[in-house]
Image 1 (cartoon, rainbow, N blue to C red):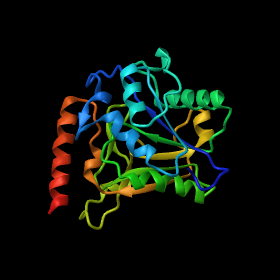
Image 2: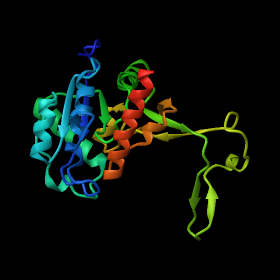
Image 3: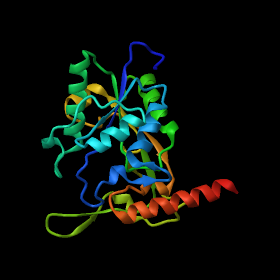
Image 4: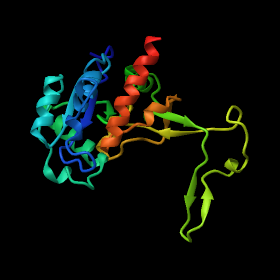
Length: 240
């Protein structure tokens, strides 16, 4: 449980059953555990989180999540489990529904996804604790540092560098970098943002990492195969 008795934290994990690219992806096993089980296991192990719930429309996913320690307070309405349903709508529904059911108000909400698997557990607690320590912050999330250049296509079909400084090519060791937002790995936000239907605020801190494996996000069979291979590579490296 959280040490600050007046600060309540909830983790909400979204996992629908109707995935298209990799059917039943949230129940697929990776390194001995289903994807939904892996993320629930990490969440319930965090002392900084008071409640861990899974929002799903699927009975099998609900059963697995419960076995790993999550609460399944409701089955998500089918209208919130469609291909174009936004994560923000799902999180808003889950938070408001759980708060109403339990007559409670949370202060911090944690977002984690089953498909982002190269998550360090300490990122979760770091995100929550940074929010607790810094009242001016609205969100803290994980981001991957990259020195790559990015281009955006304009309305007329031409291409423009995202930032002007990207026109100056130099050694990776000395050039500027940008950060890719990876909220699925770990994101803590003020609960009022989620009640408004927003996942991330404007005043943020970022937990920056340079682990290329964090770019593996499982949506297709090839992603799952890649993740399996990457886990074995990581294990072999750790054994040396």
